[in-house]
Length: 493
Ligand SMILES: Cc1ncc(C[n+]2csc(CCOP(=O)(O)OP(=O)(O)O)c2C)c(N)n1
Image 1: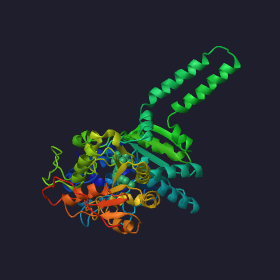
Image 2: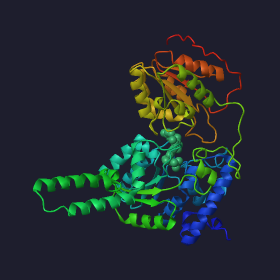
Image 3: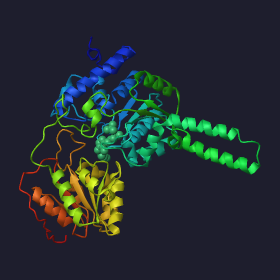
């Protein structure tokens, strides 16, 4: 068969091919992504999940005139491939190669740089305001995942968008996954929308029931109307988004190209804030990634046939932290572990299995995680907040205002401190020493080996003040582990 990707150098070329060819192109792009990422490593499952969404968007909208903004940006591989970067794609995440995330310097199609979550709707609103002030008419489209939607900034932006009646399109890519299973009330609400046909049926049955109520006293009738309005509130799909001022459409199959093209054509004709809810499968098209999308969220290089990655015999600092915390938590019921949507990355999966009631995944909500921990400490618990160095930047004020000024004993575990490698500047943990050393009451430590990390963790839990332990994204140095954990005496600053 002819190679369709050969003909695609810009999104304009997409408009010259048929819908059938577009479908075939999705296969070719998946092939390229799997082959490349098996060698370089990268965000495989997220990118495979949005191939059709990407093609439908670029088929119907006119980037770069229309502004397409990706949330987190880890899913933008297909976008890079169809916007003139298919040749360089083999060097993605390599020194001198393409960035793993949208990057303004890299392409006019990457109109807003990203890497941290939940910024897309805020950025989209900025582009909308600028467009309106300049009296232009292009479309602004933010593509955000259900995981990214758990971040506070996304809510702030939705709130602002609905109020300002901004003319923008939010595409919600709902695969029910963050890196791990998505958490929170919003995730539960989206799951309800997934089974929407049943809701519609229930609503119809309810209306019929009400219609068939015989002529009855005024009071009963009014009560029935109130019940109907309440139930309708629960049963109308997307009512949460409608209440925020958005026109909600969906849920639709996010792998059905024809359907999505139709929906995007129609949505262009509506004005105001619009949200299209698309359902996708993370890892779509590559079985090992479909079956274990958490492993293939940010994958190391792997064998395509088996999906296996190389294993090291020396444990990482992440693993040492997770194991040591379990040791300590067995002895101390007050220890509570908190993650912001990264139980795997921060080494807390086993802890969550052993101590489910003392483990909290707050979603992509670093600020909330820190204030939540501060209050736990105020009540005598020993909260451990495990967050990557780069993502803790989000919670700078909460560390100062809620933890340090009240001198509460929260232990912060900063994984991925220092240079992280392939993920690049948005993910380097380069700033924590600078932004934490200025904070009063706070002790900042960095272990030189696995044993120091273990003793530091034990010590941190005994100090009555905020403590940070930072360590790199790497395996340890391979020392033999001390059996007995020590408490180190620390002079007060
Ligand atoms: C502020 C912040 N915290 C944590 C992360 C790490 N992170 C990257 S992607 C991701 C999950 C995103 O889920 P979703 O938006 O649903 O996208 P999917 O990968 O499922 O397509 C997380 C937690 C991040 N990028 N930014």
